[in-house]
Length: 323
Image (cartoon, rainbow, N blue to C red; front, side):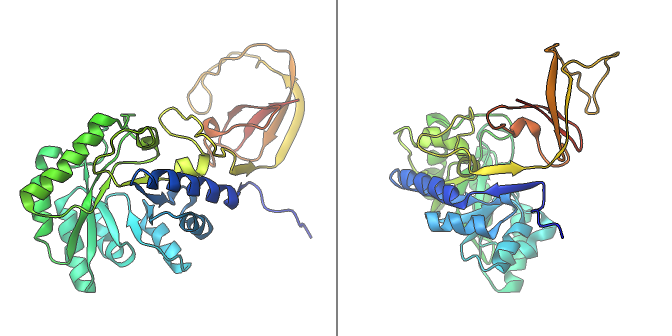
């Protein structure tokens, strides 16, 4: 009987996750900012979610309603936020499983209202505003109109506004765009008399700004996932002081280990993934192949232990050189 644990696998140190999340929650709370712990990278893992809750996050956020459903079925007790705009065909599931959803389209919010009335529940929405990164978001000039339309809908409550930066175009959160978000929150309240409870400034890319000592204005929430998992900010992928960057270890099995030339021989064309690999002749090297590939992981996101160099990957093979 084989007693080996299955491979490939990820081993996640939940004590380290807790320490990182707790440290960031405390630092941000001192700035008047709460943390929504983002669970999407772990597919809504209940163990990960509970570690975040123990660390003091104010709520959990995920981009997939399936993950939120899984956490609830595992008895994870938290306010749940759908942090991607809902698919209109999922409106009934959204109001059933999510307390709050991020929205940009009034047609979707109208359907959420319909489903919330059917379910006899209140669903809260946070309107996302476009501030330059050109992913999701209502254009600022259209915001007051959308707020007014949203507030007329039965069983819908406007929770607040937010934005997302640094994901599609790499636009950095800074004093200017964060001040604009504050100004928009103030404008909504003075124009419509609608209270704005939450102003969600962004994601892990906001940490440098949020912890810099700059005026945070009305920003009172950010969503953190990668910073907790990897212990780094996401603008330049730099480690965050006093946090761990090794909470997650990828374990994969060796399927070949041989001394081979470091430079391929023959006429070179494209690889299986369309690139042409530049190589230099370094003599013979110890090449190791692991049973994992681009179907499973992005090799560019991996860091080898000391003495291990990650050289490349195909669909099902990860190629290393080691000492």
